[in-house]
Structures are given as structure tokens and as C-alpha cells.
Image 1 (cartoon, rainbow over the protein chains, first blue to last red):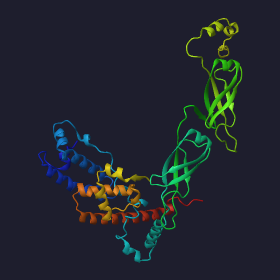
Image 2: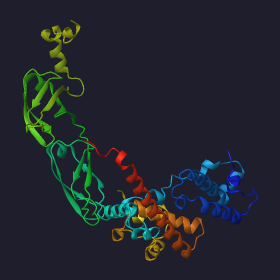
Image 3: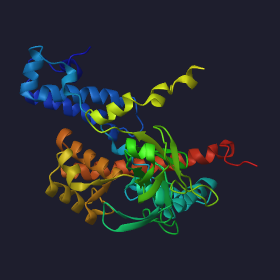
Image 4: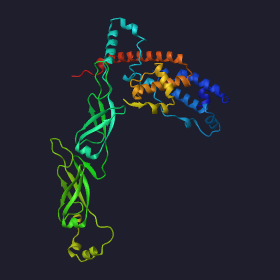
Length: 301
Length: 98
């Protein structure tokens, strides 16, 4: 590997001033923005920049000379050069026709092509602008209107259809950057970031919830409050329910094509009180039918 | 298109606010939405180029006038070349389909 001194073409004894001069001479030649179409030269410029950063700081230079660090010690993240953006619509205001304006006086096919290109640019549609919009799980299920505050001021009211998914992109026509001439504005592309709700999992148009119930509720049945994405509702647990019994709240899920909605599926989970309970233990020890019942019998057959 | 918040950007690339305003005054850089304190990617990359010209390449203000003028002409010409290239490739480009 070439040493930074070799890369800059200076002696190891070179003064700070010599190093700076050598770097400037190379950088004027190699800077990517002075070599608009030379992609290969970029690596050379990068090597020169790294070498200069290493040697221009007396501290890092001393540490390099002492063998404590190598060239990698001063790597910087990839720089984006102007040349990478100069062809985009963002740079329309900068590009100059002074290098070829005289050709435009003619009326041949080439000039016609130039005119068409210029006209297309003059009537270019505005850029699409990208935004992120945080959405709660409940909003994703139910839909509604969310106000998006734009980074540069102003707001857009975004109509959320019911049942949107995380990462879905809504296109708002004409809410992007203004266009040029007759180009019309671009669109706003709003990416939805749906916050997960730890209580629910989503499965197509249905959502599933695990609902803890007491042993008493499982055996005797009863009314329980069940959370849905849009608030709690009351539901009846039938007597003799097991852990794993699935109940269904119709229409509390996501909208389906055609207008109906999916369901909220509730998986019951029996939870005993914390700690041991003598009365319960006494009862179960004396409960012959319960002891005779083998819940694994079916699984074994 | 990303837009870059001006203050944060200037901090990251070590450009003083007054210096940046001077560049705007000098018409080296012309952010479309300067009053919103935001830059396009192109504005930001151009500012970094100007910084490099001044700090690393030792070009003075008059020199930067000339460099930017020529660079903008190069990119103007590159756009024409690109348009010509697209035009030449056009019939074979597969855009016209049944």
C-alpha cells in the first residue's frame, strides 16, 4: 500500500506547508466536481484526501509516523459531489446554456432537439416530495384524517383509508413541489409508519387478541371487557371455556373488499391467582372427574 | 427529493452561516426555498463544492466566479449531450410498444 507521503508526492520530512501545496496541486486536478464525467478519478481523489487529512494534522501525522494508526484512521463517510446532482431538476437554475447558445440560431434537427429538451425542462412537473406519517394501530384499523405538518411549514390533511398497512405509501396528487411552466406540481408521497400495538396481532383482515380470564370466568362464564382497537366492548365468555378457546367479535377487524369487515379473534387464557390457594387445592384433590379427564388423550390417539 | 435543514447541514460541513449568506449574495448558490432554511440535495452538494474550492483548493473569490461559471456550462452541455443520447437511443429504447 502506498504511504500517504507517496500519494501526495512529498518527502517524509516535508513541512506542513509543502504538504498543503502538494495536496492543493493534486486536488485542483482530481476534485470530482472539476471532472464531471470521470468516475474512476474519484478513487484517486479520495486517496489523496485521506493522505492529506492524515498528514495535515500534526497529531495524526505524528501518530502515523510512530506506526500507531494507518490510513484508515481518518476515513470519512462518502462525500456526495455536486456533479451527482447537476443533472437533476434541482439544479435547473444552475445549468448554463452559455456553452452552446449560439447553436440555437440554426434550424436543423439538432437545434430542434435542443428546443424540445429545453421546453420539456421549462414545463417540468414538480418533484414528488416524500414524507413519513406515524399512525397508531387504532387509526390504521379505523381510518380517519391525520394532519401532516410539513418540515418547511404548512400542513396537509391526509385521509387515511381504513385498514392501511405499515410501510404503505399514500400518493396525494398535487401536494408536492411546484412545477415549472405548465408542468403542474408533483405529488406528496406519504409513507405510513404504523405503531405496533402489543395487544393485537394482525392476520389478513382479522386481528387476534389474547385475553386473560380467571378460572371462575372460565368455569362459570360471565361478561368481560375486551379491548378492541377502537375501545373496549363487553363480551360474554360461555361457561366451560378453556385456555385456547377462540371467541369472535364480528366486524371489529379490518375492512374487506366489498364493505364488510374482518373479525377480532379472542384467544382465552386462563390465569390462576398468584400463589397457592389451599381451598382450591383441596377441591381439586377431591374432584374425581377432573382427575380422570386426560386433556392429552386426543393428542395421543 | 430530500430537503436538508440549513442549520444542521452547515454545522455538519463546517460552513459559517455568514459565509453561506455571502455565497448567496455572490450568487454562487441560489436555494429555491432559502427563506425556509432548507436546501435541496443539489444546493447542499454545491455548497460543499464551494467550500472545497475555497478551503482545500485555495481558489479565491474571483476564481470561484470563473470556476462555477465554467462548471455550470459543462453541466449545461452535459444535459444537451444526455438529451441527444436519449434522442438517438429513442427508437430502439423500447418506449413505443403496441
